[in-house]
Image (cartoon, rainbow, N blue to C red; front, side, top):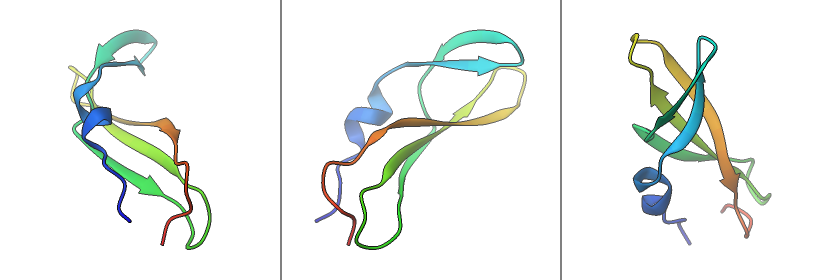
Length: 65
């Protein structure tokens, strides 16, 4: 069963962009996990200076298929 990532994309997170803490919404989110194991939800953020940053947004409840 796929995991719904929409709530993670709509929320703002505090992200460290070159020493500054900014509240940003993720551009993209995905689940990072080996098959049969619980995973971590990763978000991709675009800083105002053009730098791209990844951050863990949460953990999955069920194992990924």
